Every structure is written in structure tokens, then in C-alpha cells.
Length: 427
Image 1 (tube, helix red, strand yellow):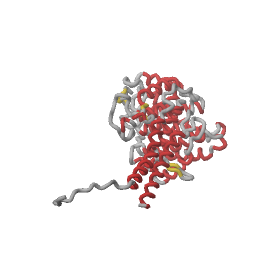
Image 2: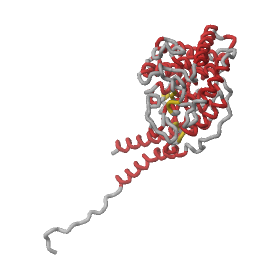
Image 3: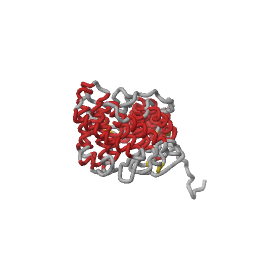
Image 4: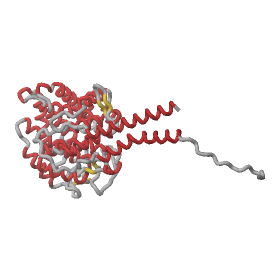
């Protein structure tokens, strides 16, 4: 019995320790806002680089068509976000890693999933995200010391993008033959605004025309940019969805902060929920509508998309919504099971490096073009953690209560044994 008692005590200690760690993760700040580096992201980037060198991009590509591209693009963009928080003389590591990621995106492996025959070449998804990273590389460098070849490449790619938008009857360019998603064009348009922020402005007219076209083609159910559109006319073909909206809300403030704030408030109303009252999360479909998941959204327990929830953290941070960004970050620390070493941090036991890439990119989010906006009205209650903290504390105490009850039952004396008369004997 000594072994049994010691084992039960060890298990009780372990459960209590895990519960206390969970409480700490819910309470300790998990994001740094737009100015400070979030806790643990530097070690997370170290883990990601090693994972990419070890084939994490190929693993992500096996999961969805843009997996390899996103794994490298988000790694590079998170380094840009990190570098922009540092003094210009301390950005060498950020610039080196961002350039490495950009080289990967422009390599044959980076363009392989996309068609060179589209306008722009390889489609607006590849062109937009790559051009945004190109601008980020320039943003890390003082204007007087920028590499002239990098400046020319960014200017030429931006000109090609603008020409494609100007020649299109729809504000939404195709990403694959015969397929168009507004989120991709939003990223591309943000890269044109970044061009005009870093270099002499050229694309204001293109931007205004794009915004006019977008406002004429909003999803009638939600008033948001739709998830998918007709590739020729740009008319909505699918209701707004969380996976694309979370990215749209991250980039739209760079294009038009006023329009973006209205869109963000609509998105927050229709998509941000608190399932079972246990913390904020983001639905894949707007309230009152359910639908199937896909490779982008993943499974949808209670209608929630984990990928959209992670990316919304960054969108909230860019919008100045510190309450929601902080709540999403703390919730992620609880359910993401981060594992730390002296030099690395990985989430979900390191099983999905692409998830780490999205999370690092989201935690480091900050505006590149527009000024940080005023915070929107707060929708996350200050006591949102309370139910989770109570559940964790109960989980920590329960093993000790069960152990105590078991020990009492084992140590209690046996009750009196009832006597039975002898059968067949006379008094």
C-alpha cells in the first residue's frame, strides 16, 4: 500500500501543478501590444527556423496548397515585426531572416503551386504576400541605406500589381485560374499602400478605385467582404467567413483605417463568441449560420475555427483592441500547451509548426503604414477568466479530496458482523 499511496500523492501533485501553471498562463501577460516584443516569441522563432530547415514547409504543403508558402512567409513577416520594434542598429538578425524567407518565396519551390500565366504572374495571392514581405525588408532599413536592387524590385512588383488592379473590372484579382478570394487582394492592396509609405507615392488612385469597388460588392448578409467571389465580376459567391475575415481585418487598416474600423466592429459582432462562456474564440461562419470546415478552417467544434481565432489575435492588436488581443493570447497559452527550452518554444507539443508560424506572426502584429488607432469599445468582460480559473482550481484540489476520501475508507474499522442463529438447533 505504500507504493499506492506514494503514486496517488505524486499524481495529485502533478495535477495540482498543471492546474496552477494553467492559472498562471491565463493571468500573466501573453502579448506585448504594438511596441513591446511578446514573451517567448524570440524562442519561438528559433524553433521555427530549425523546423523549416528540417522540412516543416514540406509537411505544411502536404496539409494545404499554400502550406509551404505560408510557413516561410509568416516566419519572415514575424521577423520584420520583431525588427520594427528594435532600434535600427539592432536589426541585423531580423533583416537577415526576413531576406532568407523572401528568397524562399521567390524560389521555384515558392512559386511551384501557382500559375505563371495569371495576371499578376503567379496570381494575386503569391504576388500580394511576397510584395508585402519585400516592403517589410525595406522598412527594416534606414531610407538612405536601402539596397537599390531591393528598392527596384519592390517598385517594379508594385507597379505590376497596380496595373493588374487598374485593368480589372473586379476589385478582386484571381489567385488560381478561375478562382478569386477578396482576402488575397486585400493583402496586395496593403502592399501598394506600403509602397507609397516607403517610396514616392504613386498608387493613391488605384487604392481609391479599389475601395469603391469593394464597397459595392459587400456580402449582403454581414456587410463584410465576402469569402469568395465571382472571378470576373467580383460579386459575392460565398458568405463572409472567419478564416478570411481574420486576415482581412489584419490588413484592411493599412488601406483605409476608417473603413477598416467599421468592418472590424461588424466582424467582431458576428464572429467573436464565448463558447460555453469559457473565453473568446472566433466562429468560421457568422452567428446563426453553420457550415462545413475545410483545410483552411480545420475542424469546427461548436462552430469555432482555431486558425481564425489565432489570426484574429493579430487583427485585434492592429485595431488597438488590447482587451480582445490579450484575452485571445492568454486563452492560447492555456490550450496551446507551450513547451519551453532555454532556446526554443513550441506549441501543441511541436506537432504543427505552421500553427507556431501563424501564432508568432499574430502576436507580433503592429501597423506598418497607418498610425495605431484608438481602442474600440471593449467587449471582453474583465472577469472572462473567472470560470476557467475556478475550473482549474477545482481540478487542482479534486485529486487531494479523492485521495483523502480513499484513505478514510481504507482506515475505517469494519462494522459489527450480524450473528445468525444455528439452523436445526433447539433452545
